[in-house]
Image 1 (cartoon, protein in one colour):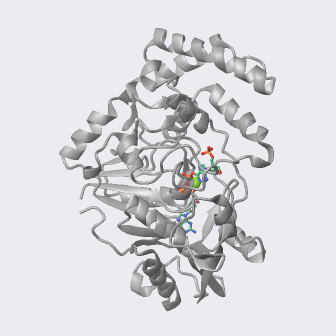
Image 2 (image 1 turned 90 degrees about the vertical axis):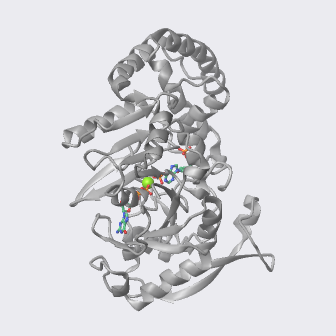
Image 3 (image 1 turned 45 degrees about the vertical axis):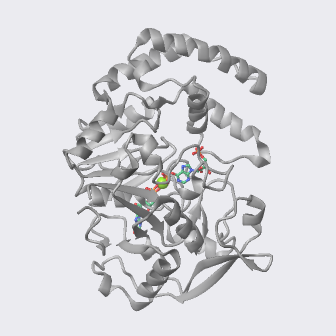
Amino acid sequence: MSTVVITGTQWGDEGKGKIVDYLAGQAETVVRYQGGSNAGHTVAVNGTEYKLRLLPSGILYQGTHNVVANGVAVDPEVMLQEMDAMAAKGIDVSGIRLSDRAQVVMPYHRLMDGIGDEARGKDKIGTTKRGIGPCYMDRDDRIGIRVCDLLEEEVFAAKLKNNLAVKNKELKALYDHEPLDFAKIFAEYMGYAKRLAPYICDTITLLNEEIQAGRKILFEGAQATMLDIDYGTYPYVTASHPVSGGVTVGAGVAPKNIHRVVGVVKAYCTRVGEGPFPTEQLNEMGDKLREAGHEYGTVTGRPRRTGWLDAMVVRYAGLLSGIDYMAVTRLDILDNFDEIKMCVGYRHKGKDLPGMPASLKVLGEVEPVYETFAGWKQPISGIRRYEDLPEAAKKYLERMAEVTGINLGIVSVGPNRDQTIVIAKDIFS
Ligand code: GDP
Ligand code: IMO
Ligand code: MG
């Protein structure tokens, strides 16, 4: 098994960065396949926190290839800032590879994401304002600018000119915004192109050669199942496919070459931005979860909405992504709770729902069916073997595996690399 996908099962911020970093110790290549700088992945190594938005979380291992594949919406400014920040901390960035087919986030994307979402008023999505939705919109409209265009000055100039002609009209008509200046953007992006050029390549050939050679590759999902453009709580979703299938189109890897899928499950639930959230706790319990877990957004600093674990959501993620193992994170955050609840089903108008409803009205109306578990009321961050976990914690985890139908693979009991209990020894095998 040489390729492993790490995917978020809930609404993001499950701790994908931590799990990717942990497994990157065994991998040779780590790949981002979708999303962009809307992601905020935190990796803690020896007490130092690294926040990554575009660079794969494998960057902290010397000698690893870190690929930003074609499915990623790349903001070159953010990418270079991150590379500089890493280099300043003494981290080797020479193994970064950027796909020549990736779409480029332009200043008008960021601007339109910000003012466009605010203009929706009470219907706003609460996006991260990083330009991700508008960038993918341009891709689908076939007017997107790709990384390879940055290397061809005349092509880039022509595309930028054409796009600005339209974008400036839209900005004026819709938002009474002043026009953006061609020369300024052109010079800015040609500067980025010069700096990024050594890292740009055909990552499709690179990755497929690596797969043929049996190199160990990790695919790092950003966002999560419930934010997937098709499978999430549409329209309160992101504009890409975080599910494991996103790897095939986002990195140019055939389905048969995906060997394992690990779904990251936070031991409770959080959500940033708008949209339904059946197990949300708009009460003291929710506040306690937020404070215990310091649940504030990495990218925007917004307080995260909090609630109990929703096993219906995780089961749905398991079906969609073919999850082999769960990596349960942040179990330690529940150390001081007397009681812990888990949603094991949805009832609607007196009936059990078999799956995830498409209608947001229905999802907003479902009554979660809860089971209540006794808390373990002791610190678990120092535990390294599954059998040493308190009985109450094991009961909670084992019920999670039962309801979701997914095996436990990893249990994370703290942000650091060593605070990890590995149950499945064959994630890479
Ligand atoms: P991601 O977007 O899925 O990578 O998750 P984030 O990095 O946005 O949020 C997860 C946060 O939880 C980060 O601050 C991690 O350092 C932290 N974290 C990950 N696993 C654990 C864990 O098991 N326990 C604790 N206490 N923190 C964790
Ligand atoms: P990671 O990878 C949590 C949410 C936003 C908003 C919606 C759409 O760190 O788990 P977008 O800017 O993508 O168009 O916003 O998606 N969102 C995230 N929530 N974690 C993330 O990434 C997110 N990326 C986007 O808050 O509700
Ligand atoms: Mg995050």
